[in-house]
Amino acid sequence: MATALRELWRFSSDYSRKEPKTRLMAHSLTAKRATSLQGNIEVPGDKSISHRALILGALANGRTAIDGLLEAEDVLATARVVSQLGAEVSKVDDQWIVLGRGVGGLGLDDGGNSGDTLALDFGNSGTSARLLMGVIAGHEITATLDGDASLRKRPMGRVIKPLIEMGLQISDASAADTGYRLPLDVRGTGNLLPIEYRLPVASAQVKSAILLAGLHAAGETRVMEPTHTRDHTERMLRHMGGHVSVEDGPEGRLISLDGRQELTGRPITVPGDPSSAAFPIAAALMVPGSQITVRNVLCNPLRTGLFQTLIEMGADIRFENEIEMAGEEVADISASYFPLKGVEVPASRAASMIDEYPILSVIASMAEGETIMRGLDELRVKESDRLASTLAGLKASGIEARIDGDDLIVSGAASVPGGGMIATEMDHRIAMSFLVLGLVSEKPVIIDDRRMIATSFPEFETLMGDLGAEFIPG
Image 1 (cartoon, one colour):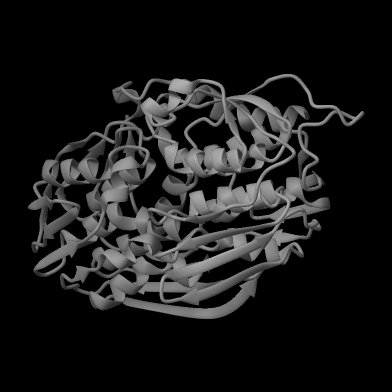
Image 2 (cartoon, rainbow, N blue to C red):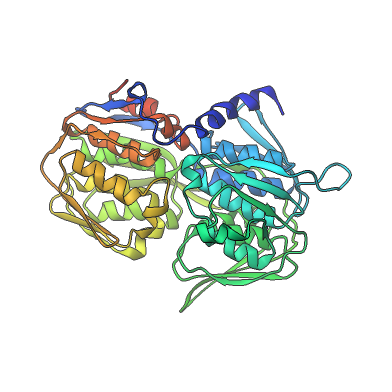
């Protein structure tokens, strides 16, 4: 492996071994009240698409050249594991190159033989772990899957169970009793069975893992999702020459995939991540006198639930210069300060904005009236119990909020007291959301640990500073 590539992965590996309860003031960050935010920026590449570009590039025949790959810890974990599985991954200037081994070709040495047991460390990345479980399931690979202390707490049962139906083997028979948490010893097979599976909960990760496994099954794999989830896997499969059919019906959306088809490596340009764009856009909507533009943002309709909600709240948001990139809709998004009003966000919208509820709750703190966000049970099994962490951060900042079942209700006010110390719980989205809140608070807001921001948005502090935000380390 190239020395430069090792260096890119070094920090990710070192950080992933740290315990989540490490609370060192040396890593805190304070957000000061801003006067106005101005400028044009471009956020890093979309995390979901970056993961899939590396994974499908490894399963394709030939060369996949990726521009705009998100070089954050989670994506670097995928690059590291894909390399361990046998694909050649390198970075040349600003472009990432994946030389794929073809469907079914990973985990083999030059003689076509399966190798020794692999130790695969996914760091903090649940997406890496779940999607690559689907890949491993279709290969004669024996591996120990592990992650950092935070990832070890996250149950993997919802993705493991359908993969077991297809033929994945789990060494520890008692793993089911603990929700199939990492570390796990697994073995894949070259003789996977196709299945028809109805998702019990809306999860693009589970759907994608099944489809990736289905590429290696002899026959048609079918996944029924009652609620539409992000479809980046389906779109990228088509981009690489794969055949995927999608049918909408009264029971939901049916995705069908023929197994053992060939994929061809193709160039991929990764658009800006809308979940990252949400933070500067939220700040511009909240700080009086602000006007910003975020260029080249992914605008897939299954990822724009936050923007739809903000427009309902009265936000001044405009979509301009709309184009298509590797099968995905992309646009520049401009946002300007405007007083907002509270709304009710239906549970049916959760799948299209599940990562954006912490920042929406921050925006709601300054919207007139109540904002009710319904059906947020999925937030309980993110990097932290994101529902509880969000509520705790709001209360520490003097904001009136409460949880009612799986709903979060935030009461807006003309001003936010701030002044609290926010326990980020090793969650990058909690960290960034409350730093944005500090830009409009009467007193500074302090997050206890800024290191995990590198999980998804390493340039956050720099780009926000370019717009006029001020963050003070230590």
